Amino acid sequence: MPRIRIGVVGCGLIAQMMHIPHLVELDDLYDLVALCDVSPGTLAFVGDRYRVARRHTDWRALIQEPLDAVLIATAGSHAPIALTALRAGKHVLTEKPMCYTRREADELVDAVAASGLTFMVAYMKRYDPGYRYAREALPAVRPALRYVQVTVFHPSERAQAGHHDIRRVRDVPAEVLARLVAEEDALIREAIGEFTPRERTAFAEALLSTLVHDVNAVRGLLGEPAEVVATEFWAGAESVVSLWRYAQGFRVVVSLQYLWDLADYREEIGLYAPGARLRLCFPSPFFRNEPTSVVLSGMEGEAAWEKRVVVSHREAFKEELRHFAECVRGGRTPTTSVEDGRADVLWLHRMWQARTPRSVEELKAGPPA
Image (spheres, rainbow, N blue to C red):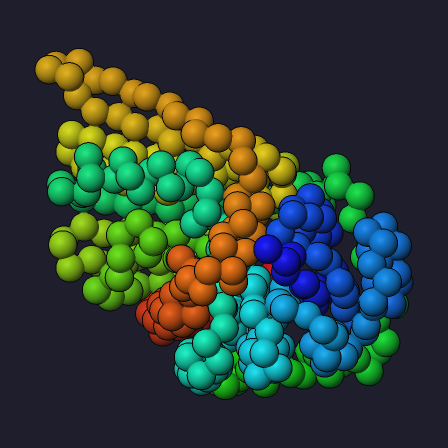
């Protein structure tokens, strides 16, 4: 079967760290044909390293290449590039967030339906062997489930990525950078109205860029919440907690803390019932082939037991690329489809709308502390 001719838009951290190396390793599935980045220096470095001759600083030019698929790994909303790629007959794998606004989400759903092409959101946790094991083990906890706790302790990027040889040259033309910022600001304004710097950080970074992964992971395990009860931001939008209610009666608390100075990333989804517990302990997404462990707890008579399972060292980012190739070749709908991405955008908007009065007052204050 012919390899999938693919181009990558955005050659920044996650593309250099995960996507491009794995595309090259999966050379039985993919032919990496073209690259695009707004930084000429970054583009030259990545192109030289991976011997990719076709290089562009404008994504529109990349989409005109003879490609089967486009992987979008830029910052900000990915809807404009994805819509253009779909209309040009290209399959799309896009990093999160899929988009910023409900309008964009609806446009993408319609475009995918009209195209008949594969569109997949790159939520790598959903393809993690540990996550898949936890889904199979969930019936032991789900019937009496009372409480779910999502905890993310996020250190600085520098503290996690320094061991990788990542090059990002600061040579983006000033007019290009200004245009990109203005385009992103316009979408944020469409989504939430006029905003302060703190509100921009809270909505675009804490929710859309970081917690989007956890929103999707929880929905993949438990389905749709009934409502978002409340959301609170503090510490200059570097801390957020959101409370969800499910129709079955249990509650989910989603907590993100940017704790920049301690180089120790923690991310866990814990599901708790009176007689059983299940915890998914994710590694830092900046480390390759670190396994996600699953911790199961229960009772045997009067004795409490605990079992820790390491399912596999297979890299979640690589597994999602395998899944995308299977969907492109077989005409299958991806697990993390455009409809799935749309639902995440809607729930993130509801989390924003559920801000407490105290949280609103803090975010209306001056620039982030």
